[in-house]
Image (cartoon, rainbow, N blue to C red; front, side, top):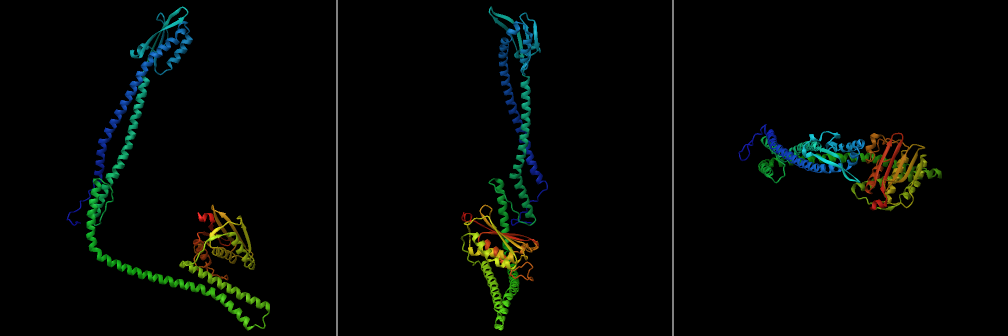
Length: 500
């Protein structure tokens, strides 16, 4: 494919990738042997210098050792104490530097020896007369010869040199790896990227090279990208009209599909809401109208006890309607963001005890036992809207009673957890919630398959509880097992944590 300038991009050659490796190998073939030779020569020179110094010190030590031995050996040699002489010789030959040692009497007769000192080079051999001092003056007791050797120095030097050469080899190997990685990143990679981009350009794409550097390679990449940009602008001008038309068609189609989907969802939500609310409103309204009609039609024949019972049912139905309407209004305000939340420091213990006292009658009607435990003392405060916190506690407790079995139990606890958080836990022994329904617990108007049951409800209480909890900075969660019951808990930070 030709470019604007009519220049055909170069064909990527199969050997180009290997060419980069050959360049690298040539560089390493020149650099590594030279560096290895320099390092080995430097190491050998240093070791030779160290050996020369150690040898010089050893020669100086030879005279000092011979002089000291002539003093130490004087008395044993004068008295011909062979046992003492052997002990002293044993201590001398224990030194690695001693190659040979011999002791002669004053007539030149050999008394004892270790090795032959005359076999060692003259520069490493020394002879010393042994004089014994007594009350009559100095007496010649004999003569000693001692020879040193530098074999141990040579061995140590060779060992160090071998280790140094091995270390240099290891360091060079590490250097090879580093050089290879550096070369691949700084030179090999941009060349590969450029080859790839040329290949994409040849196939009709607009390849780009991403390489940011201030050297010649960076300049080459920048020039290539600039060339690609100019050609891409030319193609963009040709395709602009077509692209705009296609975009407008897609946008219109998407808008129509989205509007249709939103209309279907809104209609479905309205239908579900009306179906749920019609049942929930119809039951208490029918009860209210029915008992009111009985009071009107049979006003003269109804006993006072029956009249009081009818009136209580009318009031109970009115309370149900009022509670349902309040929940709907609260949830609507939460959804629209208009619900007013007024946080303040409140004592959760006071509110929980008040709610439990208010629901004792409801629990007694269903023969449900309430059990409240707390480790909190009075005076602990949480930063919430007091009325909304009461609403949360009430909804959770009413649900625990309502969906419990007869003669069941509800356990309420209030504790401090998680380093400054107040947790309210309400556990019941009711029918529980199947695991398949756990994801729907907090969905509004979803009664978790209980629509046909005898227990009233709109399926909005738990959704309202969760929204209120989140709005006030708290957390809520639950666990539930079928036929064992459910446990719900809400947590809010104490005042010190909330204000921090």
